[in-house]
Image 1: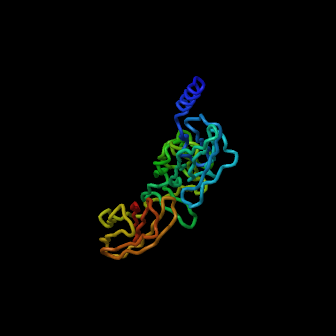
Image 2: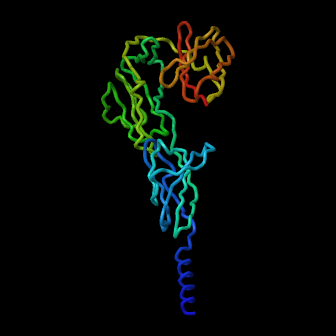
Length: 289
């Protein structure tokens, strides 16, 4: 009788000591590109472990991960981005299965340089360079957000001293680019060195007369699919649309009066609209949603 009672008490104590029946997992569920993350069992009281995964967007079954037989598992972004994980564990010969976690990663727009251009600077499509009137300047921006960390502007391949803000004012000739990273992934530094802003200094003299702001009106702004251009001049205008990197993306003409300019093929972003008559020119910025 005493032996039976002692055996019963040991069974009760064993059950109380292992009241948790399933493992619970957590880990690095949001990853920066080209980094590693770790998932682990929060209650590592089991005898054996086997981690399983599948990609959430596929109908494939979960498969065991070779070598992932510990209470934690370290994984790389390239292989396991968009994966689902769970772990099977055993305790005293009994199988248990954990909850499931999903691995995701940060994504953001490419680093670009956006330009604020006036009548003192023009883009020459033949030389793919910006012609800046002597003793003047224009402003360039890195797209912030998300690029708000480790910002450094360069000219002719050399870092510009103190040029560590998202905005920089160009007043000299050279080939400019910027490097930066988002604060949520500071190790992911991007560069525009492959598409620099090439600037040359020119003597502008009297220059080209500007169109009056009242001559041209663009609306709505921001726009999507098209924008309206009101031309109060009595003559036809020639127009060009440039991307924030200076690439000519569309040419058009605008008759006197109201015009609708189609831009359905333009990606969201900031663009510069250049409008020219026989003796005048003007620039306007538009935002495409």
